[in-house]
Length: 113
Image (cartoon, rainbow, N blue to C red; front, side, top):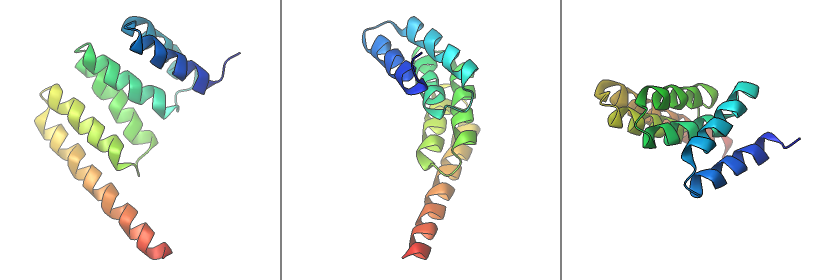
């Protein structure tokens, strides 16, 4: 049985081959089996955004932020998806959270030095 990483990689290949619906289906199966697999949620957010299925894209972007609250990039991705969905206040809030995560990361770095 393939690992979660192998399934994710297969889905990315499908997307690159133009088989977006198949990739989405594979990733949906993956997150059903492994709901904490952040990479799959991130890819689903991007893929749903490409399909202009913004509620699903936003939901998966939020899940990534929930799973990786210290990763500023996750909040930046959420902000971009919210912008595309016309959810400007939510996009601004996500960007604020990204900045907070960046500041926290810099503080952790300086404490370790």
